[in-house]
Length: 305
Image (cartoon, rainbow, N blue to C red; front, side, top):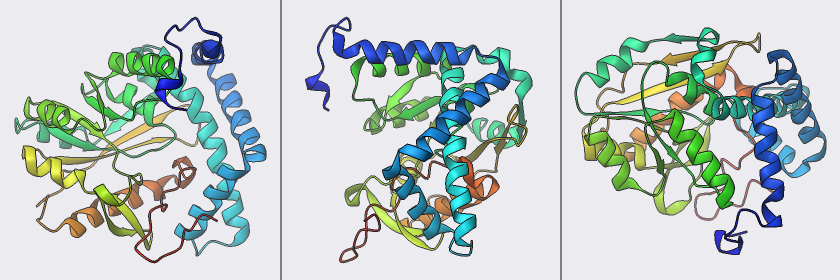
């Protein structure tokens, strides 16, 4: 449903379910931690059981990326992915609806010196993050250490978009529409850190094909383009939920050297190699539910039948 189909007044009955979802997020954000995790697991298990289309997409992605795993191991990872992403929903609520300062004791940040060194160059920084289930909570916890802007995809529902943007603007310095390249470049050139996730399929027009787990993946060119336009260092960042389901780890790696290299395929491959490395730490926490390999090289059939 497009934005134009929504009523102007947020009091309209069409928005009542959205208001209910927002209220549920506020409640979830303040649940005791054990109950929060249980709720998230339950949501994930229900989605795994009933959302068959997403389960099939997830199974396809995992079979493509982990062919060395047995059929049983793949099925287990599919189920774990739904559980992790269910927990991710209540983590998102926590990141959006609570002050991150109260969660400082739950996070360990490794490699802060790499981001500090990049920031000290005075050219701004492009941080490469990934679509893990922990993404929004990760952004909130990262803000405790370094202020940053974020590039995001606007939501079609204008009420939820307003709620989401207000939450992210509280966490980040500025929430920038992913189509606003000038805004991204302007903020980086002004010396800001901008958090950006280049691991989704945006189609032929803006992508080139590069290997990801041995598959040809449409990989957005924008990472190298932004680096070239701004001269900013590109810093890879990982964020994971620890096995105790109570604490989190942020890990910042050194900035890519010789990036961009002038070879778009080599640069895209380098970004994908980092994405692989991050995923392999906790593969169940990645957003396998989206069609990462939707766009195919000319003549190849869809992988999602």
